[in-house]
Length: 245
Ligand SMILES: Nc1ncnc2c1ncn2[C@@H]1O[C@H](COP(=O)(O)OP(=O)(O)O)[C@@H](O)[C@H]1O
Ligand SMILES: [Mg+2]
Image (cartoon, rainbow, N blue to C red; front, top):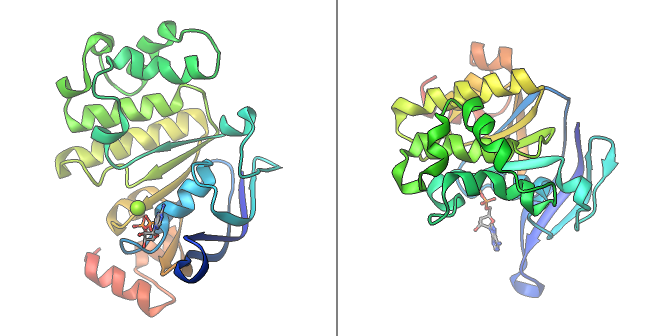
């Protein structure tokens, strides 16, 4: 579903140019959840933003569902991926009712007004249909992130890119949101790339994990490796020990 070859991302130009992602290659099969873990600033979000088509500073090859995508995505290519961000406060328009937040992607793609799809969208993320009339500030952080997830699903993408989807939430609701994501993946045969600095989140969700450090992947861990605490690189060992899994 995803094949990335030699992806590099640099910001700035000339002497001040900074290479943030340094020639990484990886692939993700349909229905798989790939984790990317690593310290803040190592380049995780930059990889996701390149995959999502939100960032144009990349070189290399990105193939999504059999198509090499360009820096400027066609409408069809845009529909393949959706991203869920860490901060549901920032990613949802504060003055739009939830119904409008959810209908927006449908409208933006000229697929109708979208109002008819709002109730079902709320239901599938475990929220009452009556929430359609609320404003974001009338929802809890976990409820808002459910709305962000529902919005990401409106156009029925194959691939969901999850950037620290539970990091801004209270610990008590993190597991609920992760379980929702796991259920939705199962029901819709979605492919996930899940970025987190939290190894316990990654271990709970992922089939396979890439460990990122300073713009490169230094280790790859299977689910079995995660369960058994097996690493192949000093850096991942250190992450494991720090997270006390
Ligand atoms: N648009 C940008 N312009 C300049 N530097 C950026 C930009 N986006 C990210 N960076 C830099 O790239 C590095 C990696 O950032 P990021 O991918 O957000 O890391 P992570 O998600 O792993 O915390 C950081 O040093 C960050 O400051
Ligand atoms: Mg990030």
